[in-house]
Image 1 (tube, one colour):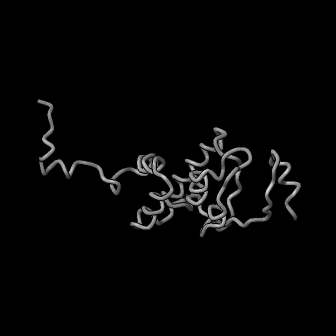
Image 2: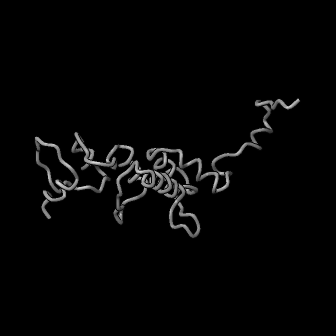
Image 3: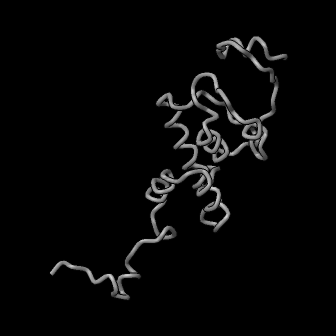
Length: 143
């Protein structure tokens, strides 16, 4: 009989937990998480806050970077250069909020750009009544 008794107390000792998964398996699990979950995990235990040996990044940061890298490679996100003080989880959050969509962004609420932790500053803001492109905006933004 191959049925496992899920109420068997000895089974609890055999099931893997996040703390007992190998690093590669754990990274795959974390890559399925959104930025909010990754941030919560990063605050939860030293397993998720300390950098992996030789990596310089914690597991949640590595998972966020792997996820956003896939979005960049597939064309689902515009190229974006992360700021020195910006975390990969913040970049993933920007992508999740639609801020890194390819092309010109329309109807973006100002608070989404200036929100705490975004690291973004409004360089130029003016209403327009015509179709525009990234090049139009690049030329119009004062330097």
